[in-house]
Amino acid sequence: MKSDVARLEAALGHRFSDPALLSSALRHSSVAAPGERVRDGMDFERLEFLGDRVVGLIMADLLLARFPREPEGDIARRHAALVSRRTLAEIAVEIDLGRHLELTRGEAESGGREKPSVLADALEAVIGALYRDGGLSVASGFISRAFATRLDGAGKPPRDPKTALQEWAQGRGLPLPTYRTIKVEGPAHEPLFEIEVRVDGHAPAVAQGASKRDAERAAAAALLDKLKARP
Image 1 (cartoon, rainbow, N blue to C red):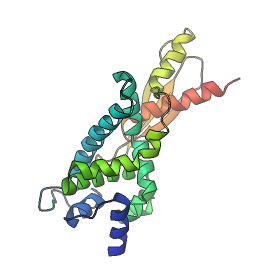
Image 2: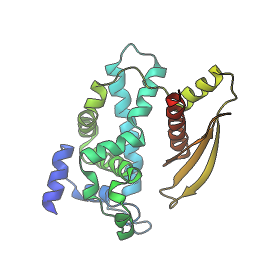
Image 3: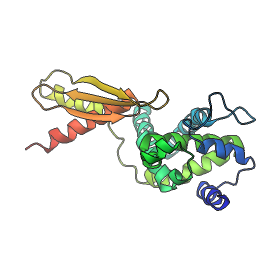
Image 4: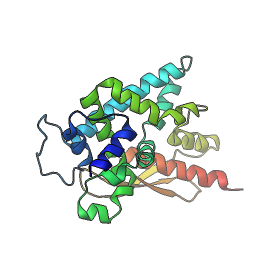
């Protein structure tokens, strides 16, 4: 177990002075007893909440420095793509975070260690722990390294799929796309939304996401891909 922790700390670039913080970040909220806290009041969900804000702040600073002449709207679109659940889950896979997570047996057996929503939440919790243990410079160092290739390879600012789909429909004189929630599954702390999007005269597309917004964006992207693939 110690070797596993050391391997993760090496991937994070930080050795924790308070190992309990890292343990809390790796202990999924489904495992912890209600109200359970480590001594400084932090658990998985609170560290995840903190990490989400830390990632947002540091990424905003990195983007403003990298693209000093871009307008705020373009920076915002880059920011949304880089801090998305999908990107966070990809980085969690790159550092093999799933193998270190403490999950319930049911969650583990259902593929929780590979589940994007679980991995994205866990990475935010770990970043929150990095910030609490080492400060902003430590958290910034990890985020700068982890996102480096994505920042270096950034081309034009990405377009929001919902906006792109709306513009596609308007350009053809069609009504605006409509979105419908098909179902919401999973526990309250980890819901999974399934959304359908339709454009008049075309087959709909369906996608899932950890939030309604994420699911709508994924559905819009899926429908755009289908529409662009048509002859």
